[in-house]
Image (cartoon, rainbow, N blue to C red; front, side, top):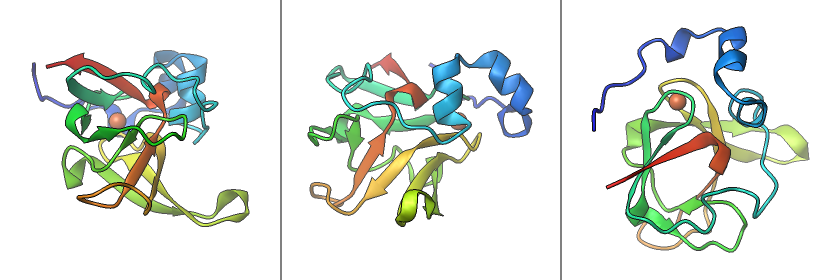
Length: 136
Ligand code: FE
């Protein structure tokens, strides 16, 4: 499997994203939407492999860091690499959260919380719609 990133992803226009992504993916990745809990295809997904950005293909999470959070969204205790994601303060919805974004394309992935398991204590709460999966 190639690790090559989608070089044009960072400069893609919103019209191009709309053409590339299906409407549900567009709403989550480009408009910071959230899929309904328990609706995503990776919530109860347990195969060994790699989760990539559904927008640009960047490697984001490995199956070995996935855990059962009970939240209704796929949950990971760390990203594949620190550089894979960018964290941003999100003050929407009357609260302060930390948004998780794909560093390569700027796509919204989900949020990270401090109530995860060891070894990191972090819970990356990620929309299935933002992810693609490839078996190991
Ligand atoms: Fe991406």
